[in-house]
Amino acid sequence: MIYPSIDKILTKVGSKYLLVNVVSKRAKEMLRDEYYQMKESEYHSKKEIGRALEEIAKDLIILK
Image (cartoon, rainbow, N blue to C red):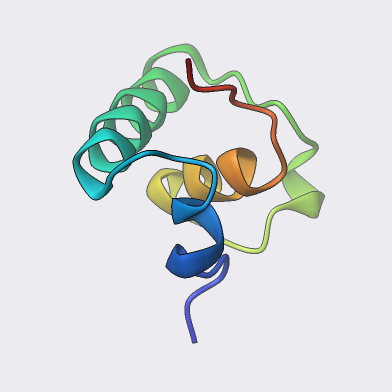
């Protein structure tokens, strides 16, 4: 099972297309700047895409 659940995240984001766009930008930002909003030990995922999804699920990224 994927963590965090896509269904849970879609309640916070208006559409799948917006979700893909935001997650992609955040993952690239993580790779470029090496800045994470949580401690690395708190992430379940090892990859930046999963980590970006986790940040959205924990309301660390606010979409307007």
